[in-house]
Length: 326
Image 1 (cartoon, rainbow, N blue to C red):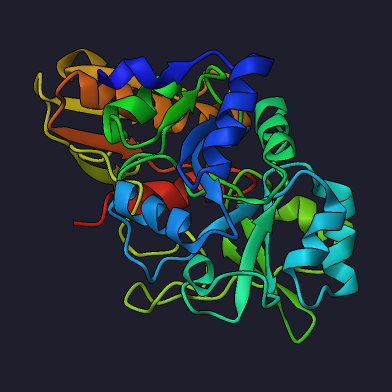
Image 2: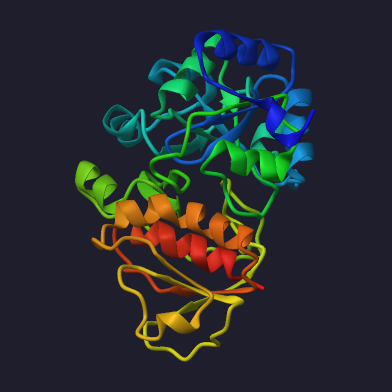
């Protein structure tokens, strides 16, 4: 089997086939609205262990569980604060993950031994159909090698994981393009563990209070997925700059701008524009996709323009910062 031979159209027959693979304790890569996930039966520790093996992911980094119905969250969460339930009703399905105390039904390998578990309900018809057909919550981190760029197409999955997944369901390019926002609660206060596809401002508006943004040490073990200091990294060296900063310019360098090319754009090998309309949703959707394109082009160094620190700009900056750590 070549890398591309395990990519399948997500018709009813193949979704049933994928569900059977999940039942057998193997893995399936599938699209969500954020990025592609590498999924396994969350109640099967051996199957979940294969996720870590395929991704080369350290066992201390917890997984996110995906459900197709809000009611199923109560099989996984031991306690659900009223505020968390309010967020579920407003933003599920969607790019929001909640981290709350777990029940004994959740294997320790899923939560990396923590007393909490991360759960979300994706807003993608293929993801929901697969979870429904599998008849179990699906543990699914992003379908990439650990620490590398997250996949926004089926081919990105195949290029990084090859024959690792027994099957890859091809749902086309994802729409949100960055991972979910992760929220927990401390003393009944909402806490942002990871900026993502749902703006913190929307959560604040729904709850009528500020979301705490703690300073998390990059050297500490993660309390939620995707929270390590170095993560989401392209093969090329990446540096965050402000517009007008001095940079190296040759055919091996690329410039990633928010909305307009730099004045000296012709001196770079490649210039990418995340959103000509200055739309942060469009910029987030383009981020990983364009970084994958720069990798394929053999670029050695990427200069990434600093983004606005509001809305989904926070999620973009989070990915750029983690991806630029040496």
